[in-house]
Length: 336
Ligand SMILES: [Zn+2]
Image: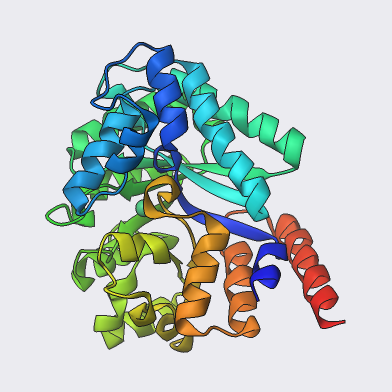
């Protein structure tokens, strides 16, 4: 089963590039940029990565992001992630980035996007990996700040496919960003949003009815509302589920209670993703393996998840066809 998972080509639809920052690289860039971090050795950084609650996670997450200054730093960060994609057989990825995490501390929008774009082109050439960018607004900040970010993004509009909504969910409902999402859609960005990870089902309703998202990030808690489940199925909306993240942030107590199988059984188009892999203990294959073992998923379930990842990506129809052919080549190999 693990060989089957590793061999299958996959798409990742929920990944924060700042969350793929491995301790070694963080330490290296901090030294290069002569930035003081509260850790003296790589081991100390690694220890800090073993947080025990959401706030500890956010502390180290923002400390890490704080060492990213130059275009080269963003390039290095993204290349390290693409290398993992290559190792995990991720051939299509939709990368979220948080401009405000950087612009709020004086880094120019163009520094961030230029570094990411350079890596994207190189990953395509080196490993044939296709990727799209999702510009995510930080929901703990104001809608006005999101509008400012939208404005900054416009010269780079052709490089960005979608807008998202992330960071602390509780107390920051989707409706807070109604206007900026409308304006973003007018600019051609496809809307997605984190909803129902920690937040209540009302937030998922708002994400689909008010922000009119094309996909729901997490969405696990939809299972608490039968009408919502039916609506998600009816509207054919996919969920980007992140098993190891759910476990690490205690949204699932043990993996054997993870809702992924229930979501599939209800007819919801769920996908598997790594979220913030450097912090949550694993990239794509590790997520698949963990949830497969805990929920005893069949090969058929794995195949469904992988097909969903391509079908509900923002790739073109032609690209999707090519991807699915590649998936079936591997399936046939394993069946013969
Ligand atoms: Zn996320």
